Structure formats: C-alpha cells, structure tokens
Length: 226
Image (cartoon, rainbow, N blue to C red):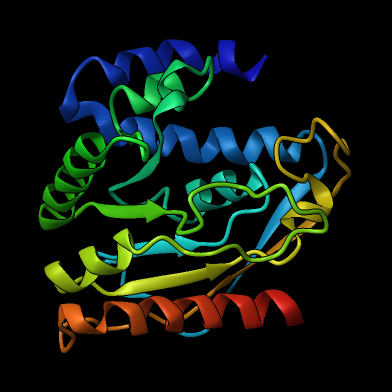
C-alpha cells in the first residue's frame, strides 16, 4: 500500500539527478512508516555526537532487512547511498533506487566490482555518505552471528582518507530475521548503536587488514553484549 502512496513523488524525484535528494528523504519516511505500521520502531544510541557535515563510510552489521530501514532513517537527512547486490536492480521495491541513487555491484564479477567501487569513490569525493554492509549480505545461520567482512570498504576508506562509522544492530533479527519469510515478524524496538568514527587519514594500505579487524571487533563485541 505504501508503495503506491509513495510511487508518484518517487517517480518524480527519480527523473533527474538534481532531485535525488528527494528520494533519500522519501526513503527515510517510507522506512519509518512501513516499520511503524507493524509496531517496529528504532532507538538510536550514539557513542559520541556525529559531525554530519563530514563524509563517512557507514559499516553496519546485517541480520535483517530492517537494517536497511534503520540506515535509511539514520542517514535520511544527509546525501547518502547504499552499495548492494546487483540483483536488487530487478527487485520490485528497491529497483528504482538501484537504478538511480544507489550503487549495484556483482561481487562475482571483478569488472563489476571494480566499476562499482570506482563509482563509490567518486560519490565519496563529492560528499556522499556511503552505506556498505561489510558482511556482503545476511548469512544463513540462526540465531545469527557476525559474518566475515569483505575488505573493499576498508581499502576504499584508507585510499580516500574517509573515516568509517561502525554501526551495530544487535536485535533487529529478533523482530524480523532476514526477509521475514521463515520466522515472520513481531513488534518491538530495534536498538541501533552508532559507534564513534574511526579516522583513516593516518593509515596506509598496509593497515587495511588491521582496520578491517578493528571494525569487526567493535561490531562483534557490541552485538554480543547488546
């Protein structure tokens, strides 16, 4: 139902790149309302205040489609985009975004990955916050665990000297695991912990593995303790 309510303004905003900010704002409200209608809300906690005038790479863990809604709400007041799987282009709901605002990537193709990360680098240089799920998707383990991180976001952060913000959502899966098909959904409050930014301006490519491990441990420890 919400799709048909939001579609006319969404289509209008999608016609020109100069209007894309309207799509980002619209997605924030779409995410909020679609969750609220089924009794799901988000409680954001910040380790320290974030200076949103700067550009960041946002790295959240991923156990639920609600993580996407949470990031849409958190970043909805900024110029931001997601990088996600190429098949999202064909999805009924996400397709319009991945053909305009967001960046699809086929991780099975080196050429596609290279082009996507090159495009992401250009967006970051122009002040767009980039949201990347470093696990690359939702794993099949239930109850979920933090999966292995991909190296791409951390190498890009070091190359461009962009700080990383780790984000932990320890309980979104309890409301809605994966896409909800197997266990359904239940109302509740999703806790979203926004960790302090990690600076990268002093790092070299030799530090990429250490940065990846640092972000992994920050998220894993918070996920375990809630």
